[in-house]
Amino acid sequence: MVILGIESSCDDTSAAVIRDGVLLSNVTASQAVHEAYGGVVPELASRAHQQNIVPVVHEALKRAGVGREELSAIAFTRGPGLMGSLLVGVSFAKGLAASLNIPMIEVNHLQGHILAHFVRKEGDVHEAPSFPFLCLLVSGGNSQIVLVRAYNDMEIVGKTIDDAAGEAIDKCSKVMGLGYPGGPVIDRLARKGNPKAYEFARPNIAGYDYSFSGLKTSFLYNLRDWIADDPDFVEHHKEDIAASLEHTIVDILMRKLRKAAKDFGIRRVAVAGGVSANTGLREAFLDHARRFGWKVYIPEFGYTTDNAAMIAMAGCFKYADKDFCPMEKPAYSRVEI
Image 1: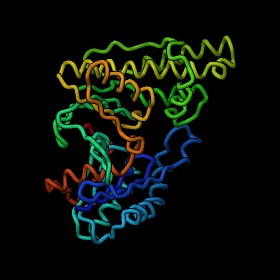
Image 2: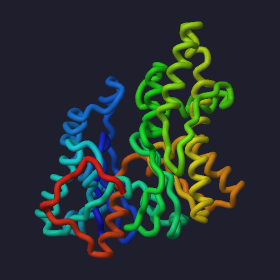
Image 3: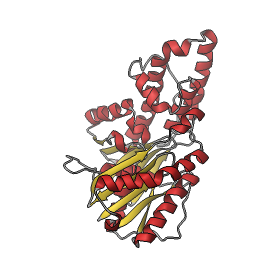
Image 4: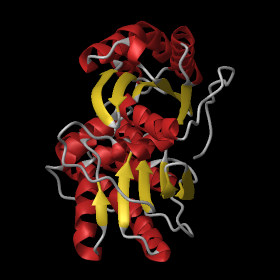
């Protein structure tokens, strides 16, 4: 079984090859063009995908030492994501599958992030989570607690009712003048600051749902007052501000996750998505493993952001069940797990 995975949901063009469950290659082309605009520009993203997809797929096959005629199926991100970006990947997957007369496998991008925990390389000492487990899925646009009963049986038990954690970080970074994307910058600065230097609003939402709009508003009001008193305040205190912001967001995320783990009686807990690269969040997972006896699963940094390895892995699960996708299925921009 040789699966080619293709990911093009946002601003990363990625292709990966998995043979019999073992990752052979994972190639990603990122787009720096969006940094100047403080966020992803959909039209620019889709144009870059058109330029990148052929060389990226070619390089993935080359690194894997696999010829096109050896492919068993093509797994591709059908959604959710930016429609223009998705169309590039979906159209390419359809054309290649038709030319090779092999099946297509559609993958939900969010499910792919969760199944990234099952990606393994040759010789890896790798323990994938056993079902059922809880997964905190945190990315630029999503903050969800997902009950994973099987690779094809996932239930969102909690989600953000407004901003996601990644969006809050990016917006706060932008108003501080630290640029986009904000996650890596805030993470780097937070390592040098005092996480208890400043207090920001924490939401009081029932159940397992999240809210980050109040935190963002609290941050903006505090920032306005600080700058009014000292125009250079951010420059002089950015490490402490970043550390306090990160600490607050991680605390909000973990508080609801603890509640869900207790209520569902599950101690196998994973984290996935772009924000799972955050150092403070990863440390919080390790701390909870010690304090509450959790078995935690934290992805390698290469599998936190959008990548095709997770898409190919999801394709492996579906290929085993012969869960193939008809050629006429279109891309979709919005859907829940």
